[in-house]
Image 1 (cartoon, rainbow, N blue to C red):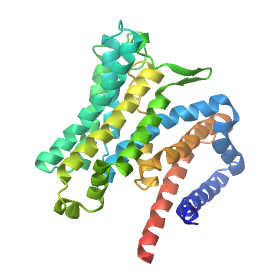
Image 2: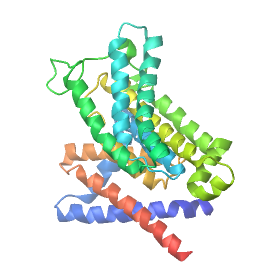
Image 3: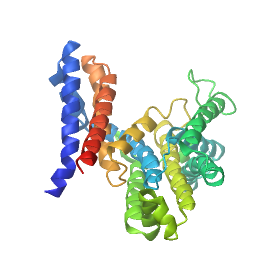
Image 4: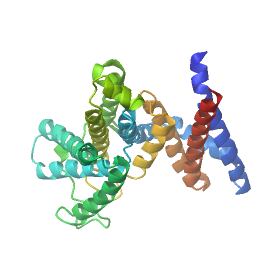
Amino acid sequence: MTQIKKVFPYLISVLAAFLIVGILLWVLKFNPLKAYETILFTSFRTPNGFIQTLLKWIPLTLTALAFTVPLSSGKYNIGAEGQMLVGAIGAAAVGILGRDLPAVVLVPLVILAGTIAGAFWGLISAWLLYQFNINEILTTVLLNFISFALVDYVATGPWRDPAAGHPTTVQIGQSGFLPMLVNNPPLHSGIILAIIVAIAVYYFTSKTTSGYELVATGANPRASKVHGIDIRKMFLFSMVIGAACAGLAGAIEVSGVHHRLIEGLHSNFATLGLIIGLMARGKNSAVPFVAFFIAILEVGGSAMQRTIMVPVQIVLIAEALILIFILLSDIIKRRQK
């Protein structure tokens, strides 16, 4: 009964959002039932649809964790976009410079380089918070803009692919490609890394002493400080771990999907990651499940635009409405208490 009560606000929020979007579709002269059939079932009709959903799930889960891990300590990492891009730069740099290394060496180096690069980008904001108490929201957002400029420089400068019509680097060494789990349709082994990270984050925050201190810091910083927890170190640690997750997402996109650094590689993953983190109410354990639902909507939305010409932005409207209704349910709960 308790589990039903927990899930109920989500169900009501989804139904309410779908009802409003359905009315909007009807007003725009589209068939709401056909649109929803395409959105919700594309991921399960064919192997390709399901694998495309899994490929979306990987960066969505990691960028959402980039938000929820710092949130566990009471801090807001709005810089997953920049951290993912810097992670992609790090991965591409190692993949290009080490192109002659064997796969057993280069693949781990590419993934590690991206993760460390993302963590370093988050460390900048964490250090400014730790040393000068500069608000992390401000610094993470500003660093996003710097990361855009860095990607533009790398993709059009030293490692530019002159044959490409879009800003992109040359391909990383083939020995730096993530191994494939399925060849047709293609599914790379980055999904295993994402699952391991999601499980590790859940275990750390719910089963370890340090994780308990991190969560306690977010719940009540003053009480945590009184009980001997170094809350400033907890803030710093959570920001770095969250940024590392985003950097890993960038490395996986380079090593597993694009095999190069491409301008726009981050797509809307970071924005959706933020939405997923809020939908999950900051709970790391809920992130993979919410991310899978959003991945279904994203894949279905693209299919809807291709097949029945409904703008894909309709899906983003639905996602925003779901989030709004979930947040409203939280406000109502607090007032009832």
